[in-house]
Image 1 (cartoon, rainbow, N blue to C red):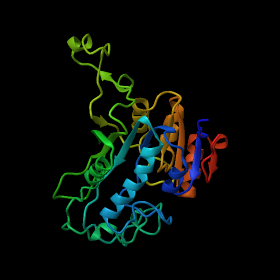
Image 2 (cartoon, one colour; image 1 turned 30 degrees about the horizontal axis):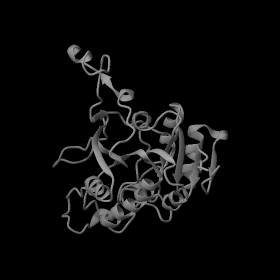
Image 3 (cartoon, rainbow, N blue to C red; image 1 turned 135 degrees about the vertical axis):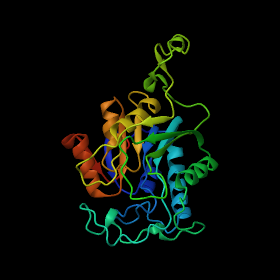
Length: 295
């Protein structure tokens, strides 16, 4: 008898240990954004993003996504949002964040102050280090989608352009995988092409997505936009399927899933974030548990 996971739950636990409990080929799609390297300290033991070096950070994520690879169905996809870090950002002790009295982004001294192989001011290249490591580990690297932020935050820099985008990598478990191109197709400007591409007035989605960041009143530092998660889910998960997010945060992936006829499993290590996600998605009807439930 096939193991069936109870969906629409939030699991307050370490994501690697939780993924190990999931049955093989039980999840349709993953949409996630891991904590970026050295950017924040969430004040939780065993959190991702606080490893001693970028190499150890990449190794840990590869281990986590190897378990995800196992639990995805053979036609499953991984939509991975990841940002970069600079070497030499130094002390955070004099910078305050109203949401965290421990310093800006919750840390007094950045882990990226000294990075082996990088000079101060070097861009570390975290997204591509991770993308190549996952490809080497067996994933199909299918697309590098640029998430362009039309309302990007200003930066106090005068010797480089202000950052206004992040990467969303589309990975697939197999050569052939579920991908609903029509669900995220764009209006076609060329009238001649409207009759040729089979999309009836639409064109295939491009790999540059302009989606503004959205303010979130909760205490979670890095809630990504609902529209971003929704686009990934529509293309990567069939209706009625299960989307998983091993770094659930404030629950954007879960909210996008339920709004679009999909189920979700959220894994989040910080208890306060679990409660934020529960309230954001729907409150009383949502369970916060410590372990996977198999029906």
